[in-house]
Length: 110
Image (cartoon, rainbow, N blue to C red; front, side, top):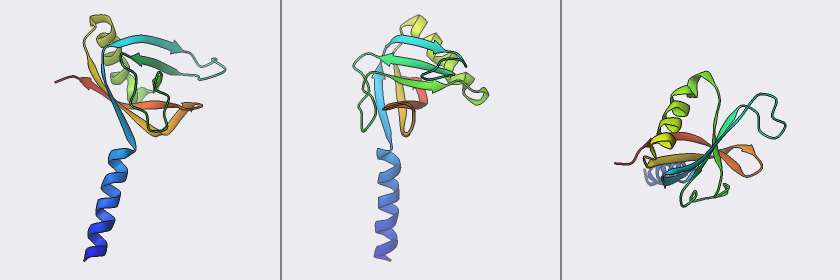
């Protein structure tokens, strides 16, 4: 029984710590097209205060431009335009360029 509890705790902690969170206003947003040689089809976002990095870049993170992420992109553009603070969750197991991680969630600050 104790082995199962320890295993469950380890899995839970792994999930929690595999994502990096940041909160603040989006200070920069850059769009790359399919022919960008460094990081194609991403929307790179900078946030005030930077990202609390595990092994991710503290300055840049991005949303991959795909059909199933259009709502994230729209939300990021609206937040940038209105200067509303957001909370961003970064997936440190998915890097789009060197140490730059992708964004898995973006939401309004409560």
